[in-house]
Amino acid sequence: MPEGPWARPVLAAVLVCGALAGAAEGGWRAAGHRPSADAEDLDLWAIARARASNHDVNTIVIIGKSRAQLDVHGPTLRRRYPQSTVVQLALRGRGAWAAFVDLTADEAFAGRVLWFLTEPDLTPQAHREQRPAVDRVHHLGPDGRTNAWLRAQVASAVTFRHADLRPRRVLENLARGRAVPPHFVVMGPDRFAAADFDRVDVELLRGQIAAVHAEMRARMAGRSVDPARWRADVAQVRPHVAQLRARGGDVVFVAPPVSGASAAFSEAFYPRAAFWDTLTGATGVLTVHHQDLGGPPFVCPDTSHLDAEDAPRFTAALLDRLVAMGFLAAR
Image (cartoon, rainbow, N blue to C red):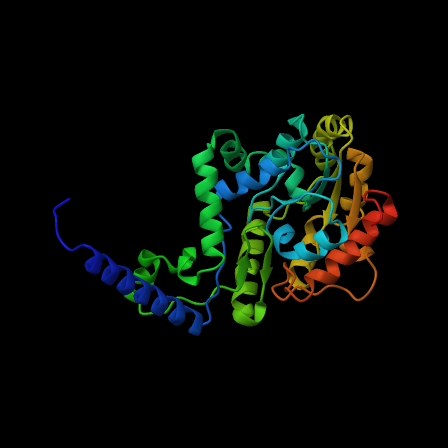
């Protein structure tokens, strides 16, 4: 390094960078953006998964898709079970079969699994959807875990670190003549997330969900799902459940709240009486359906996910039900 008075240039550079970062942070917050960890960070998922391997029967693990991540209120769960290790392993749009099989094969895991699912999540087509995340657990070294932890901590405190606000994405939006819309889902380093539907165009979300339903209807081409074939498929979970129970662990299947078009779609293709209500007989696993929790029905603004204001009530009602069933201990 060449000799010279480096103290002032370095100090000036730090001050300039700090001022630019502060201006960016203030600008994005003024535009409605909030800090959030990256829900698609598989390294962060791997860190959470590793916490479940603790030989503790009091460990509680949440698996499933985005409904499991948005509908479960982490603070309520931890307040009810302060001595338990609570692990959030839900991943948006990916069935949790691979994660469940990985947990049951892990001799160091002996906890309780709350599996939020829909009927297709137990069929062979969904078996590999979370496999990339599971693979990260077995290939992520100490440096990767440290980096993922630091990323989550910084992103949860600093808005401009959000994935939607990366320079490339911002420039792409500007080139198309549009601003980056504020994100309505915020996730913490613990991977629990909350949705504020007041910050988003709900009708747009409903339209996107309706498009997915239309695509699935077209794929089915008027055919109905065969309940007997479905029960044969879901019975494949039995040996994995037995493996987990042999270590003192257990699993419960949870049908999360849906309303409106999503509820109608589910009932049209998977009528509860012919599918969900037969799940315990086909798998030997206890089930909880959101319609059986009592109290006012849960309404999903986008027809598929709960707002952050309703997540604590749903979580409390679900825990009460699991205690009444004997799946969880009363605390």
